[in-house]
Image (cartoon, rainbow, N blue to C red; front, side):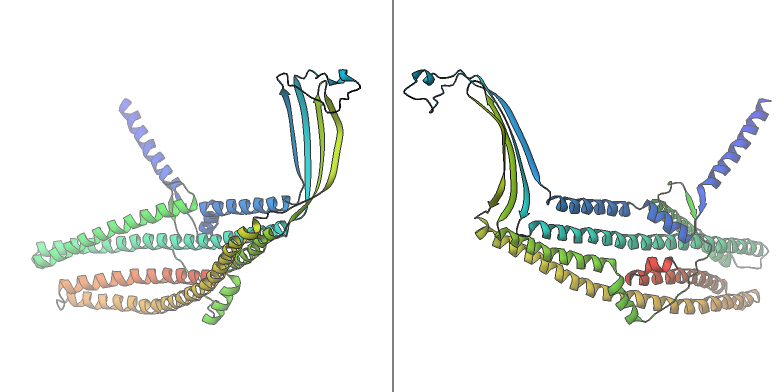
Length: 441
């Protein structure tokens, strides 16, 4: 009875293990992978934090227009000071007696509202607004990078999984050939050397399968990290990747990139912010004018009591040191603006180069699909011919094994170039700033 229960427990354990493994497998399409990548991207979360920082900086710039108010007060203990009141007269000498003072209390409230600051506040607000908009554009650019990285990782996973499937299929054929050759060798119908060649090929394919499975597991781990999935999740990509390609001319992609690229728009705003920073720095040459007000209350027992001492007026301040200190600050601000302008020109060249490279890579990938499609047909036909010759003792075993290897390579190459064409097309769209727009169609 105990043995029966133990056996039953083992059976249920194996079933449970199979169920857990099944739960770990998760079929995911490319569009689902992109959605998960965007949702769980640490890069985009960091970009959002930068937007929040820039937005807070803009709010701080607006708050500089608000009044400043300071309150201070104190209670003081005094050590029997000698007080000589200048208001005493000779006619009444008793007034000359020093009052006994042991403590003092006072409170002061000061407030000021900036009226004119040479443009510091206005230019500061404008610069912060431009930088906040640039932060949002940077986040949009990062979003494009996350989408492209997800597509690349997904295609790598697809290629790795397809490699495992094709190599396994080929290994099964080769292992069957080894069995057939073994029977022929036992019956004296095949040379021992031919059998060894077939066994060697089987061993090489087994090694290739180990490498393919290792690459697939690494690609799966990378995909889980990108999508925010548990490490043990086995992602099952689509069995086939097909894409529709609406190709435009190279000039159209370049012109579109100059308009659509978020990094270019962001850099343009940063350049304007740097130019505004020059104006804000030059504001140090001008005085500041503020509306001021305050209230004072004080109590010194036996000596003085002050209440309702309110005041209001206007104040002007000017730092004379700005006459000789501001010039270097302005030069630094102008240098930053010059760097931003040069950076924009460099980015224009980079965009043109990226679009050209992506366009040529895609054209090359399309041509490779045609070439490799023919290669698969040729390799299959060649294998049939060599197999027929081998069966009729007109071709060596080495010729047959070489034909088999060529057929395997042709199949893998066709799978790879089809996937690479989709990746090249997405890279072209990204370089032109059209990637997410194309996904939403």
